[in-house]
Length: 77
Image 1: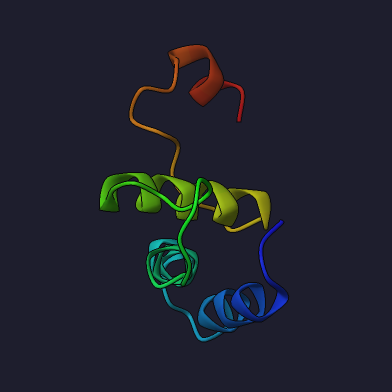
Image 2: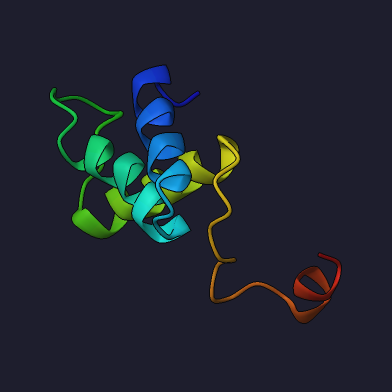
């Protein structure tokens, strides 16, 4: 589950009128700067971005669909 401080910052960005991708950037930034070593740390920057965007979607930030999303899924929204 995303941290409440990051979620709060993202919601504040949306309230200020910034785009959803900017708000989702809070989650990505948190994932990249997340300290620590071990098996749960992302291995690459791409992976950190994917995890951050996933957390943003879980928190309800209206981020665009993944590029590989099926046509049916895009149509259902």
